Amino acid sequence: MSTRRTILIAASALLIVIMLTSCTSKPAAHAASASSTTSTTQPRNDDDLQAAMDKLEESIHKPSAPFHASFKKSDSDGFTYECEADISPDGITGQQIDSNPATKVGDDVFPANTRTRQLSGTPYGSQNFQTAYGSISMAYLNGHIGDAQAGVKYVGDEQTGGYDARHYDFDLTGVDATIKRAMTMGNSMGLRQTKDYNMKGSAWIAKDDGRMVKFSLDNIYIFADGKTSDTHFEGTITKK
Image (cartoon, rainbow, N blue to C red; front, side):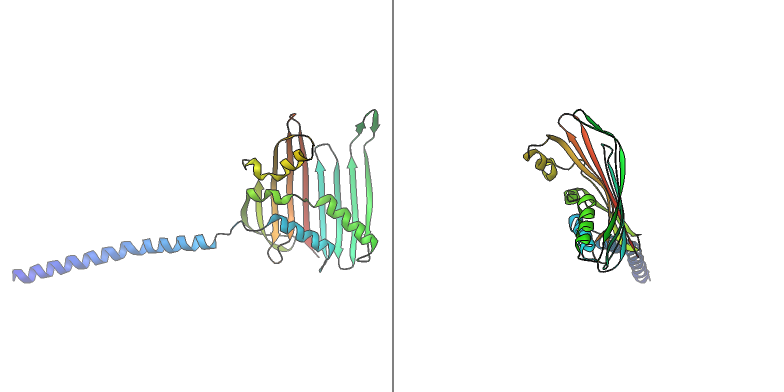
């Protein structure tokens, strides 16, 4: 009788151990699975900012579908440039507004003024089109946005202007100076000596074609003499 009781107690104890092990192992396995899922779906910072800006420029030069573009550039000296343009396979139409403050050059003082220019870039491929395209690409599309790649961080997926896009923020604060190529570029050309350089802002890149469809950024130069120069760029592309 005692032998049977001993076997029964041992069997019961084994069953309890098995049940406890099962209960404690399942949450751990679930946590590991959840962790694995999170890590595999986390977006990477693999969009190329410069390539996205180049694709935007290409879409202005060779538009496959109509869209509206709004651009603005301003600098710390008070100069501002704004552009609203409808772009399509038929050409480019819109207007550009340039404003400048009173400016002194030597002994001459030039008064503040605002000038409005019409963009009549039609038909596509004509000299008028090339002039309108050149006016937009040279004035508003930042050619050095690739410098910000070292400081880019993914923010999230968003919609802007009718496009599904990936939103990125970027800031070169704290990035090694050797990576800031624009600094050495100015120094090597014999221009004002740059003490520090930063580019910070945001970019939205379309999921379907990798084109920049919205951006807002600042180029900031701090010179050895303590002076600062800041140029602000922004642009928004909207489907039509």
